[in-house]
Length: 421
Image (cartoon, rainbow, N blue to C red; front, side):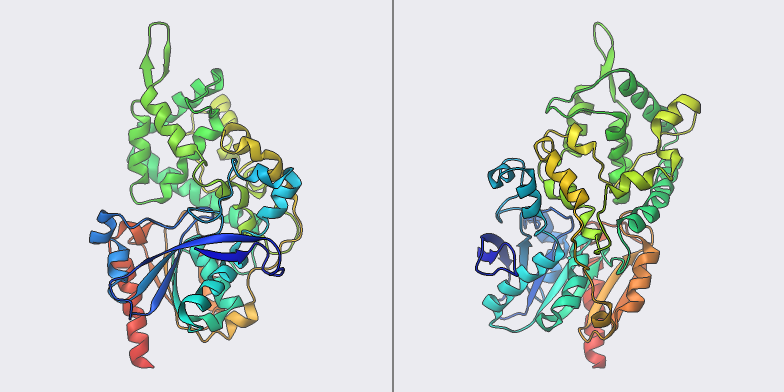
């Protein structure tokens, strides 16, 4: 457990705690810090199955691994509907949350690095949003880095949230097309569920209000290796016939509420658009604004005017999330203030990245739902010395789904680069 400043530009001010778990087979090996995706996800816990065949089992062959619970997550000082009201009103909560982006995560890591290594640089592995943090690390504190590894997380360096979502909705359309091609019977199944939700206000057992838009957001799983199959099996027996009427089955309701709840990761909802903010004004609910440019996602219109499929959505946060999800309702005002916040700093120094000397290696997925391929490849060209492996073999969760393949390929690229040097 490490004590760090809430605001790093005020080192003598309020302090919070950040937790990191060391996992190692040999303490003489160099450090590798794992930065989890998100935002708002805690670092993975080393369970037996992952240790037997996952990326962590491969990483510990070469490294002393540090699994970092980024500030606000896991065992670090939490930021949730239960803890944030202790800050005061919504304005104070929002002000507090502005200190939970990549720049603060990296400065936390730098404090931890100096305490653990005595000042020696260490290696970083960033997955998804963790990759965004790793690129910020390269930009802001390259002296702390020996090597950088990125999987599914090379960000746009100069784009904003509007740019990100304008590229994301077409990818989501493609994922829907693939899903319905694989499971054509689900065109009718999804429309039937959406029609039911239009006609019946549905409150799930945990208090979640299941609207048509909330139902559409189940599509976030379509960017994972088995997501299409999981969504299909969820839809296939959604209804149950009771004494009085046909209604959504208990099984369906319990699984949907687990899939939709942000109780374990409220920072994902609160800061999702902020991780793209680059100092060009407020994000102003970018995903909702840009969605209007893609009318095929308007389920109300589709159900009323055509027989077209109801399109699922994913990786977008909207104001209605703070109305439908009981874990977010108490944070609704803070979420509105964050969407209106204007003083976000730029995240990447392109001049520093263009002169980068830290060995860096990335796996980029051609079919990635969550991170745009074209934007990633533009950034790759701007980061000097970044070696990239582009593959269509995996989805965004390739690091976890592939066993050791993805991490082994990255480490192999690093080994070859060392031999050349």
